[in-house]
Image 1 (tube, helix red, strand yellow):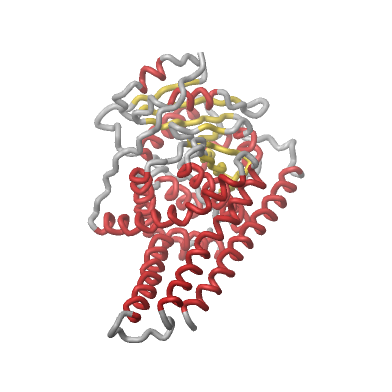
Image 2 (cartoon, rainbow, N blue to C red):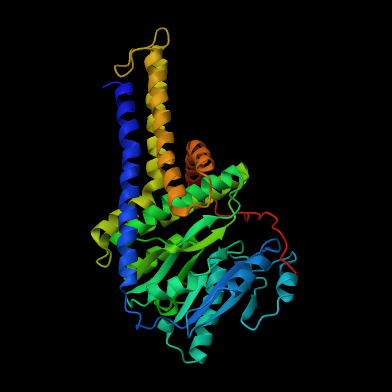
Length: 433
């Protein structure tokens, strides 16, 4: 079989695979929607909601984020509060928060040596404060919910209502909202919105069906009772503390659900260098969580399908790196074989065949993004189709960033480099007076 034959097969099968995922996710979303419409409205959901906003030098965005969180409407008969964890900010974050006067706003200021130990430690401090308050008020921990909205996040108006609806089921202990990008006017932002709003969302909808939903760092909510089961520090110092929290909850037998109709928006990283740094950190965090593989395999609380899906997600950086190296090696060897004096390669006949194969492989990398661009337009209806098709064309370049990030992450993990600089926020419009 030649490279051209393989390229033709991939050109057909790869977008078909994505189309099947899309169709299955749409079917599952409709099934879940019908089930939600039939749920028992008489069943009372949790009545206490804490939205935790961890922030470190977020003066550019924290004002809007906190104001939006305070505006989120709780379910009837429930109350919501906002707890901002100022993790040792030395910019104007404290001044912005001090200027906000609201009875349901609370600020927890961390100072050295406790401050700046990572987002996970900031969330743990908030968790312990809420746990102690709940005990003082003699509240049932299952009736208290802790959510996380990042310093640049905005929750949709229906967020707490959707969380309450999902947590009416006593088997559900945590939920994750759909993530969108609010600065998608820039092409890199649009590409990330295509990724989170369509591709990741479809994958999470399917994970609902098999019980392997993952938690993200923004828009996650968990019952206090589920977190108490993990001890004094539910979040770790892992570079992707949200991924590890989700794994720990699954291993503890806690059900996690994805909420496609609950949306949290965040800033996309639109500077290529910062984007590469962010994706390298995420890939390294995945590598750090590989230690959970033996526990997942041995667990009796995680179903086989869910276990396989989670194992794939954990091992994806390694699989991507090996796959990319293999493809580069095949094409590289084919090119060398065509040089004068080279040894013939049976899978490539001449230079035109090699170029044709490259074209087919390039088409195969672009076509899935086209599928998701159309899905984005049909499902979300807030971006022009032409713009999303442009994002789909850029998407393969975006994936190359991910491959480079994976290689860098492997190098950092091997060399035991763990420190990271915080991703800098973009300046946003000031709050209206």
